[in-house]
Image 1 (cartoon, one colour):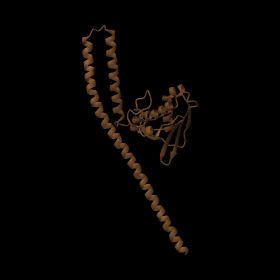
Image 2 (cartoon, rainbow, N blue to C red):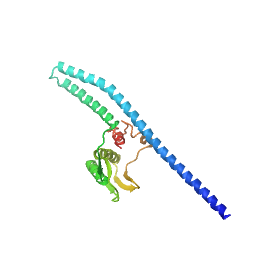
Image 3 (cartoon, rainbow, N blue to C red):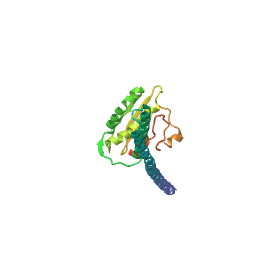
Image 4 (spheres, one colour):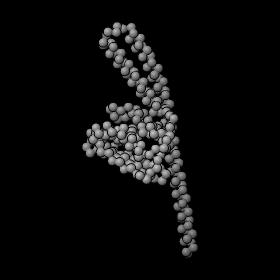
Length: 234
């Protein structure tokens, strides 16, 4: 009976090991699928962006040429006309810049890798947002791990990625009392973990599913490209 019990326990353990192996394989396959879908979405966004850029810039060039022609033919001392031409040129430049920002947020760029301290890098990034932190009277809490290795990244680009996230967090707390911004680093196995949190009102599920889409924003003064660019850099 004891031998049979040992055999049964051995079989149960073998089944458990096999089940855990299958679960791990499924988890890994799911992670790869999510990554693949994200890449496909990114590629599709890039193709759409390039099409839009081409279709918008062509008529925009014609508008600019027509404006220049009209400007040269009309009397130069007409203040009202000059103001209208300036308005057209300013908004034309704005549209062109938006197109450039969209293209930059949906294309791969060359990375210049170097080894840096993640804690020092985050401090440098926080310094870039210092004006906003002071303006909104935000209490910054830093929980950095000392037992953490350096990382190899494109320092300037990763700072842009972190800065976009930090600014989003700060803007989420604008006008709220007792605003607290927390940034934490820790080591897990061979990974460096960065956790950024704020005491804002959060984001609803529908908006959370769209935050990386170009031009999606609920801010009155945002262009909806910050997190798209961040995802591209990451």
